[in-house]
Image 1: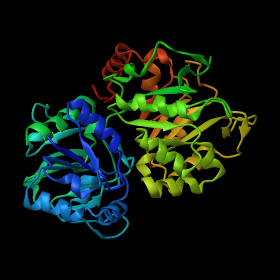
Image 2 (image 1 turned 60 degrees about the horizontal axis):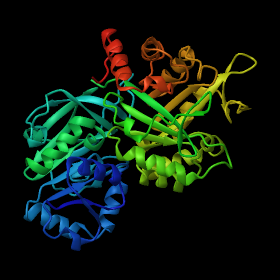
Image 3 (image 1 turned 180 degrees about the horizontal axis):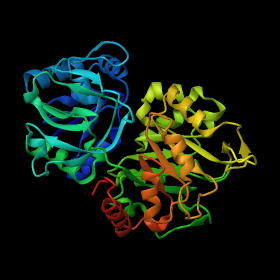
Image 4 (image 1 turned 180 degrees about the vertical axis):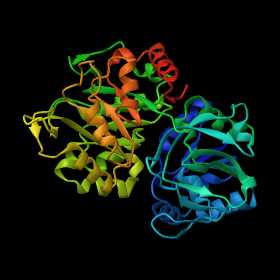
Length: 204
Length: 248
């Protein structure tokens, strides 16, 4: 299986690599479009600010090949944390910024509340709404590791695979056709995180 | 709901895992033991004395830990430049812990958080009561005063972009007598970011107090005897039985 982790200069790629290797595959990390030929699975990592992420993606020379692979050839892609946000239509972090627009969603801040520490950091349980194959063999309400202040709000609730609760309910995972997004870090969520990655490789 | 976190802190001296107070190397533990399924997070600190050892040894140790670590890994010690943060992230850190450099140059916090994101920057504060009995921030293993009050410094740091605060009681560190709960609560109640309690944990009741009285989001333990798989599970069962929501 050919797995490419998209290298656009952002994200802890090493952790994702280790996790994919633990699951039993050898991923390629690349920013060269030539390496994306015949890819079976794409992973879009990312940590940090939305605008910085979009800037790096736009400068990376990968958007053309990624659009073809994701939108035309329907190669399954998994966006992790900032990665899942970048695939949305837009973000309101530090002002308005367009995203890739591959899924219909807006990145908005977690609603601040008294006694609610932000960023949302730590293990939180994920409740299924319309679970995708990513969650096969994972019990409902399992804990995953989150670290973020913004999330993807999806107007079409049917695309929300799972949510978590922090102040209010927030999207934990979504799926639109071949496009999967997880707000949590599967590569940092031990046993169940590794199963999510394994499911992405073998069950979608 | 968001769980409270139990976090193990490992101190590394020239690439070797050490026990803090006695500064004795602990060769029993290798990177393999980090595959501990109950711990929620790991913090690894380079405590090599200035001008001693080879920093490359730390990167090697970090790389080995990170390879088998499927929980978040925060790394600190000797972080003085943006380049240091990039390097640590490259070797496997998810978050970076900064301390002295932020005190010397608070703008380092804003630069780092702008570049890597607030969630990546943990500000570590070491504090104790000074001769007047007032809590004060210290550096250099508690030897040098800064004349800063911990809560004020913590608030400023979060305004500058720190995503988490790690508050360590210098006096309690290594004593196994429990956290300085007044210090922890003072900081937790006055900042909007998560606060991690550090320094003094000796038993599970201390963890409980850190959460309930200290209002911490996470409790840190540097006590190496807590680091067996059974210990952490047992700690979590204790906490669950007392009504604290932790990850099973």
